[in-house]
Image (cartoon, rainbow, N blue to C red; front, side):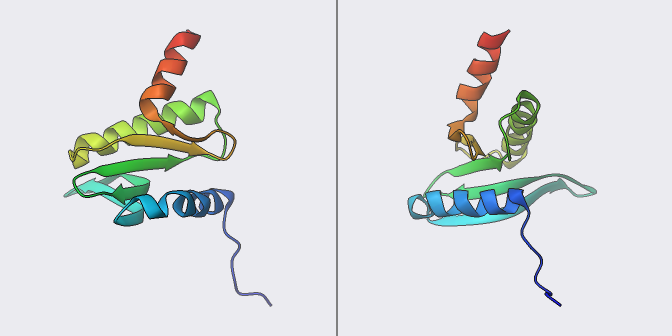
Length: 111
């Protein structure tokens, strides 16, 4: 019996993103929780550390509007609680890495 568990699509996409950005950062952390003393608020898929910046990456398996809105909310909330200077990105297999601000502008133009 095979005891290895297959990685989820999300985890495979996160692995691919890690490979894409690995050389651009001093350190990359995966599945980083941010929390208050009494509860977990959320989890960042990838937290990438440069000299004085923390870049936040949220991985979504597809770029549906609902997923993009959720990713925007997740990255903005994480930035609020982390407070450190940096940028926020969303990664989807189809669209690659996109800055959250660009996605926000696209969604605004749509409506």
